[in-house]
Amino acid sequence: MRTWYFSNFYFFYFATIGIIMPYWSLYLDHKGFSAKDIGQLMAIFLFTKMVAPNIWATLADRISIRNGNVLVLLKVATLMTFAIYLLMYSVNGFWPVAGVMFGYCVFWNASLPQLEAATLNHLNDKRDYGRVRLWGSVGFIVTVFGVGVLMDFTGPSSILPAGAIALGALFLSSMLMNGPSRSSELSDNEPVSLLAIIDLRVLVLMFFCILMQVSHAPLQTFLSLYLLEYGYSNSQIGLLWTTGVVFEIGVFIIAFRLLEKFRLSSLLTLTFIVSMVRWTLLASFPYLPIVVFVTQAMHAITFGLYHIVMIQLIDRFFVGAYQVRGQALYSSLTFGLGGAIGSFLSGYLWTDYGKQELFYLCGLLMLIVSLISLFVMPKITGETSR
Image (tube, rainbow, N blue to C red; front, side):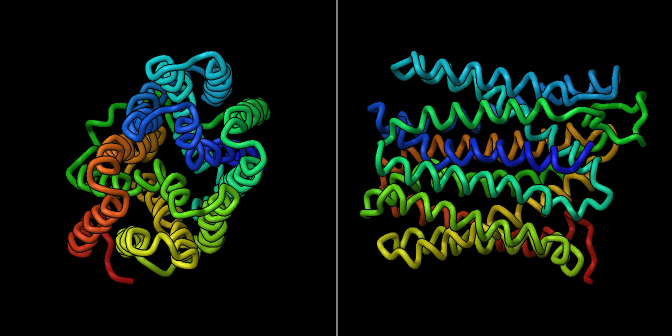
């Protein structure tokens, strides 16, 4: 299968994220939900990451054993995501909206872990992952900036149809993908239980990643509302979201060189340190556009580099028949559990303690994580100095 098909899917998958992550909270605010309601509803996106990837990884294993092709699940998942999302046009109230969001998120969150494993199997040199993945960042930029400009003319009412168009395109892109997604080196008789290979190193690594995502949740849930309160326009907010992803693309382009020169443990610790600085600056100077611009540029490190390093580590710890399960575990525990906890708590902290204080707490959390990581991360990865 051509690498372009993977890049195409990444483009449209992250194009949908470029609508949901920055603007869905604005849509929910437009629908009349409170900050606590929005925090709980946004947590659904992340809570389903704990369940959906692992269920679909089990299905992927069984289908893969029978016919060597799990990409059919991508087609089913994207079709159901699109179909259920359209129900948003007909629901109102907390629980109906929550039910529809849960429905389409279960299928939406099933797609990415399978794609990550299939992409790594497809590439001859896994360090080239960043050059394929960068097209997801391009897709994110297109929608986050485009919808931001559109909202200056139409308001939050344009968010829902924009999401429908993006999800429809995602389904169509999945129909182009055909062929086996498992490595030809795998045996049909390989075990698929993770218990045999999940050790203390993996658990500690996942715990660090959960805390990383807890600290990112206020950004993903409330950044747009945060900036609106300091006088930023919708198009400026879209531009600032875009800024982070533009710098992220730069990291994806040079990632293979960073992976050659530096230890994974050092790079991962760096992402924790930069996160601490990012949240502290965002809490201290939200009224200064240049500072907010710098904090968004840091997204290249706190997400782009972080994700590349973690994909490499997961691929190192989970090999063969464990690949899809490993990617699912990474997605569900970090982006899922960590993001859901952070999103849920941020709604209450935002309301009860204050907006800037929320980001200060995230900075303090990452300071603690960074200090611990300096000592324990090399032991977790088993790396020696280069």
